[in-house]
Image (tube, rainbow, N blue to C red):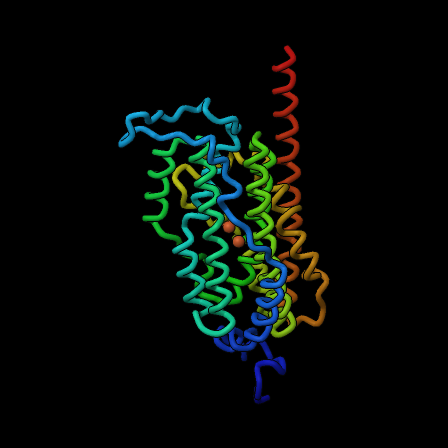
Length: 325
Ligand SMILES: [Fe+2]
Ligand SMILES: [Fe+2]
């Protein structure tokens, strides 16, 4: 069979990244226009409690050193805010990765630049909030940022455009959930409001990539199924290179900002259900195998999440008993 146009549908073997990129361009244009219609412009400075701010020591004579008690933000809120901000801070590396994969021309390029500009707001508003409200040690935050950004970020999926689209569909939702839960656990309504605003942006980013993934399933179902299986099985958060990430991630799991249960129920399942990934039929042998493996993996993850739930519940009742006694 001769493939005359990538849009006519073709066997998986005929698809290359370049062909898919070209075939998806019109979907990108449509989704970009939809995004621009629904995305509301917002001002990061309006979310920051500037009148709480004071000078820090160094160049100002009236500078006041940072201390933990200056902010009402909870311990878990502090940990999660630093992880989430450092993750946002690595934007230059993310821009590099997606500009390399998606290109900087046409509808793809317009999306890459618009997305980057929106993500830039997240780091701006979070840093301004943290410094004005004195929620975290500013010297440590800056040292962490330097070390984190100096490492750069290399995508696990740089080898494949399709894997990258699948990854970001889940990752944008993961970021939304992480910001939202951080707000809920922060103990500060001002922080909660700011993170809810960011979470709304992340949700729209997820919708953009999820709709693109839907189009990829229609064009190349087997390849897309394999990409989804790969990224779900190998998933890790973009902030994994942050200094002390393991420890912070463990605290965020206990603090119910982000854990296996949340990952399974609030991140993986909503995207998979929306796209009916596990119900999709008409797959070839490779796609079918990937779909079955994905189903098995999710079953295992759910069981692991249930074990975590039990441990967390036991920990909570131990703490409640200790507090009561
Ligand atoms: Fe963001
Ligand atoms: Fe985002």
